[in-house]
Length: 117
Image (cartoon, rainbow, N blue to C red; front, side):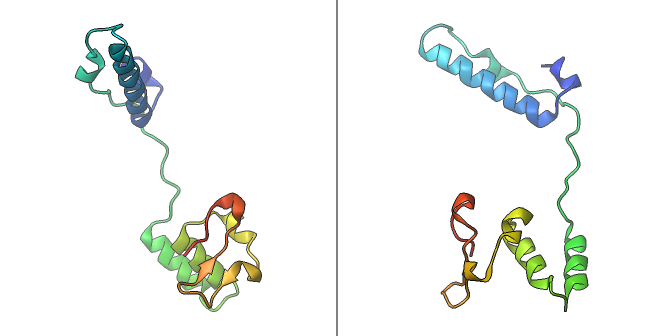
């Protein structure tokens, strides 16, 4: 694990250790090993992961302010509130909206899952 910590992130190391622990647990159930020694170790710190690409609260507020009174305002609000991907929202048409429903719904499409509320 220490060798892998030079090239992998801490989260990836945690996942690897989890896989190892589950594998040994299954071997224990089949009486192939007597003890799961992987339960005794902690994953080392790995390389830092990539920085988040999410907007900060201040960036989201600035975006809402900039989009106010523009044709994109509804698109920006919908994007921020639902967390839907841009490719999902760009495909929306007026017949995707049910504004009279309780609650109002947006049918994102069968391939993207259920309606967003």
